[in-house]
Image (cartoon, rainbow, N blue to C red):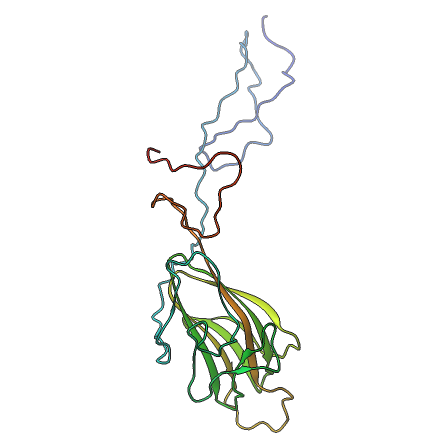
Length: 255
C-alpha cells in the first residue's frame, strides 16, 4: 500500500523556545504517517538572549563632611615625595612628622618601652569620659600607606583605643597586648587626618582595678606614597628608579 507499518524508533520532543511551557516529556506523533515520509529535519530553536540578573547594586557613598580638629595646623606635604618618610620620635613630637596632640591629655615621648631608637610616643592615661589623641595630617596626590608599630594597654569596660582616618574608624582594640604590633594603614589621596585615640567610656568610677595603664604607644612610623610615573616630564621622577643592563632607555615622544 506504500504506508509504513512499523513506527519510527526515534522520537523528537516538541519544543517551542518562545513558550514558557516545559518540553513535552511524552511526545505524540501522528498515528497515520504520510505514505512517503521525507528526511526528518530538526527545528533550530531561536536563541533567547540572556537576561540580566536582578542584582541590587550598592549605592555610591557620598563623601562625608569631616571637620578638621582645631589642633591640626600643619600637614605632611607628600604631593612631590617619591621616597619613604619616617619618624621614630627621637626628637620629640615635633622633630619629624608634624604631630598634633590634645592639649588637655597630651601624648609624650616615652623611653621605657619602644621598638627602635631611644623613644616612642605614648598617650596620657585616661579616666571615665576622657580621651587622649594624637593627629597627623597627610596631603598626597595618589595616596599611600602609613606603617607603624603599635602598643595597646587598654581593657574594656575601663578603656579602649581606635585609629581613625577623617573621623572614620579603621582599627581598634578593647584589650591589652603585651608585645608591639606591626601595622599598616592605607591612606587615600587628598588631604587626610589620621588620629590615634585612647579613650574611656563615661561609666563612672569603676569598683574594680582594670589592671592596665589605659594608654597606647606608637613608634617607628613611616609613610610610603603611591608612585605614579607617566614619563610626561621626559625623565624618571622616582628617586629609586635606576636603568641597568646593556644600552639605555629612551623617552618616545611619538607613541
